[in-house]
Length: 302
Image (cartoon, rainbow, N blue to C red; front, side, top):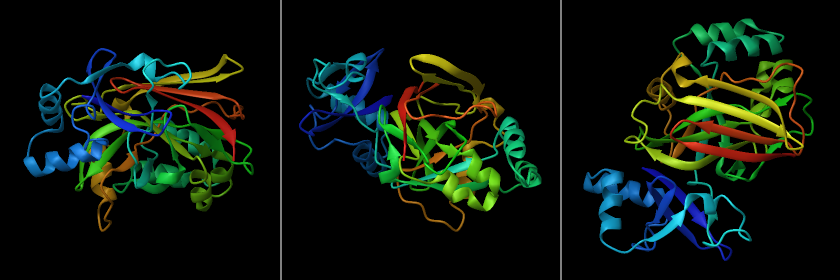
């Protein structure tokens, strides 16, 4: 199933599951102690029951509130349900993997004054894994993502993201790894500043279980950037083009490194705008991944 966290105008939060095409069932309306996917994760771990089976059992036990998914993608003032999309969960840490696609390696070699290091990483056993964001810097659907005020060349990076619980992958979402190509290109040691800043990434719109995404290495990924309501860039790829699997990236991340439950890991991109393109304040970034929906954010300067 796909799970969505919703919020209303007075700050109430609920967890819902998509049980039919575009139809959400409010789990919290049946079991008021379940307001977050982490609540289900803990119960699943203790009981040995899958998250989806546990959800079905909860929903079958009561009369859940039915909500239109299309409704919750509107603003509070426009929706009749009273609910709008929230960030699907609160990741305590966000990490990212780089140079996982051949196109990404070529683009980063082109932007860098020291291009050989990217080829070395692409062909090495050990991946490039770096700390991307704290929870406070990570945005949700329709929130603003940032470009740095001291950067001259900025791009979104649409990526499949996986979620870790007790050291294992338990689900997936969409991630946007906002990046300063000018800062990283100046010197690879500036990577932390190129990657980590206010509003530096977003995730959403949902959390999808392993049942929903049985093969994460075969998903279509698309990205559109709009400016003044006109498309100025579009690109697509497939996660089948990844040189490393999600499991491989996860295995390297947790070597000698404890990560808290619900840590989220962005897996890299091959959708890169051309060198003459840079994001501007007011742009809209729309990322879609097969079986995960659409993550949309506006761009601001931070």
